[in-house]
Image (cartoon, rainbow, N blue to C red; front, side, top):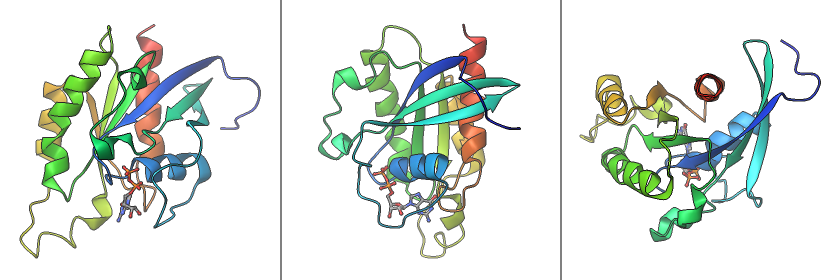
Length: 181
Ligand code: GDP
């Protein structure tokens, strides 16, 4: 479907999740259509814009990256303020990032006075079969979905590297944002 004309609506979507789960790569894949293996932690600007056709309506999403703040466990409270929705990522091959999802939920809830529509993304699915053999625990689809449900979040598995389900993830979130109005 062609993307022509002015968007009917613009939403601010912030990315959350531990360092190195693939937030910058996710935005790069969505907005630039490519995967850059050694992306620096920021794209040099606060946000990127992506226009989507959601059920025949043009919707613009402003995607905000953390600018690497999460490395210092010091996400500014203001980061989530005025956000319309959240993309919360973890790395499905790295359990710690999955466990930390609950802390992220807490930070988000503390910083926003409304319940923010959320899409939880289990990223790096392309790596899933590589790991496992060396004994590391990968997070299953079922475990991810269960946690997402507990958090009141949508859930999807993605690969920023392969481009799997990246557009679907943001389209589903945009659909929820639109129906919430
Ligand atoms: P951020 O700190 O959350 O922004 O994570 P980055 O986007 O900087 O990614 C951290 C590392 O994981 C980089 O080496 C990326 O190339 C890599 N990475 C990100 N997404 C994927 C993915 O879907 N698959 C694989 N195999 N690697 C990924």
